[in-house]
Amino acid sequence: METVDNGGRVRRIEELERENEAMKEALAAAEAANQAKSRFLSNMSHDIRTPMNAIMGMTAIGLSHIDEKARVQDCLEKIRTASAHLMSLVNDVLDMSRIDSGRMTLSEERFSLADLVHDLAVILRPQAEQKGQELTFEIGRIEEENLVGDPLRLRQILVNIIGNAVKYTQEGGAILVRFAQRLAGEGRVWLDFLCEDNGMGMSEEFLQRIFLPFERVRSGAVNQIEGTGLGMSIVKNLVDSMGGRIEVESQEGKGSRFTVALPLPVSPGNREAALPAGGCVLVAESQDRRSQQLEECLREIGLMPVRVTAGTEAVTRLTEARYENRMPWAMLLGQELSDMQPLDAAAHVRQLAGKEFPILLVSEGDWAQMEYRAVRAGVSDFVPCPLFRSRLTGALSRLICGEGEDAGGTGSRDADYRSYRALLVEDNELNLEIASELLGMTGIQVETAENGWKAVERFAAAPEGYFDLIFMDIQMPVMDGYEAVRRIRAMERTDGKSVWIVAMTANAFVEDVRLSRQAGMNEHLSKPVDLERLQDVLRRQFG
Image (cartoon, rainbow, N blue to C red; front, side, top):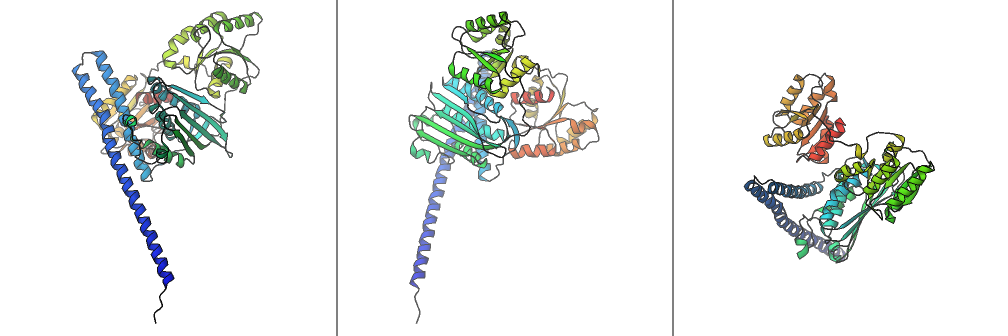
């Protein structure tokens, strides 16, 4: 007689039901993902066509008004803005693709937190100013300024978050960005980042999906704002890859608050400029918060701050100090005074105290725009805000102790590269014309080669030391850039080992930078080539 195992049959039915339920959930998830991708493709079609329409339309307008310089210049500015936006869309799609395929890698290199934050301010302040927004950067307690990590990806995280705050905050709104650190032990620190705005905010329902790819808030107001819906998904993946945490709080109509915590190794061998302790520094700033930050920074480096809030008060104190032979070591000139413009105060102080007295301007302003007027008014050096202790210490050390003369902002002059020669290796005629023109704008002498093989021949035939720099494309016929560099490095001549070689390529990912380094290249410039980045490479190579 056959025995029926009812218990086993029930368990099997339960397993089948669970499998069926799991398959239903997987199918629902796949359908939701397909719907999200369909929405994404629809949004991308719109978002890509928008800047493309601007580029094509402004090109046509510029060509039809070719003799009207102001009109053409306006068209070119709009083309540049649209091109930058189009590039950001393409980068988001490529980044998401690499994350999905598991090919996203992070670099490990030394970087300065002060430089990173200053770059953020330079990039994002103009965007906020266009909307009349108040964008405030605050620096809390910073344990270590020189860190190790992937500065490009870190900047991508921060630009994305702050950029969204600017984008989704109404005109005249306020955005607060704050950086601080906590010790994490074993040569590491936690970098704490906060971005808070009073913009349109997000619903509780959307907050559950904010880090999913292709997701965007669907509302009439947001539909007018361009974007891929990939930015926050990329941010979340990068933060997770760095071992960090990200949290979001938001209410519709009241704004959003993003907090990020990232563990980063401290760069070994950090050394801050030293100053003799006990010296007195005059601080001229009427705003309490800014003055307090300057005073705290001075106390941390062993100096004694004395505050004044007006230009006339600064002149009176310095007059008395000079009469009593107890002049302060320097004056820090802030952004606001109660009775006059800071540069007017600098002119009065310079006339009183003489040409050797150090006057440091500490400001959020664009030094390039104010340098001429500031130097004429008597400013000795410039320290940018957000304020970092290393920047202030370095400037004071240069002026008080004479270390690193002409290293400050006021000592900068347009570089002259006419005595240097570069070999430009590029197979595409249009890219060759663009790169030649950009390099020519710097004054450097340019010779060209159309592929890696020709570049090796050209370099071998030239006398030692003839080329100071080589810009090398990667993907070329006959011989690619990697092989060309390896052959140049292997030559039995001194400059083969020492000549500075820069990759100038459309291969723009971290892995591509690593491959360039492994082949023997010193720098990596991704296309489209940015003139400021190109000039930065020349400055660091030639000084």
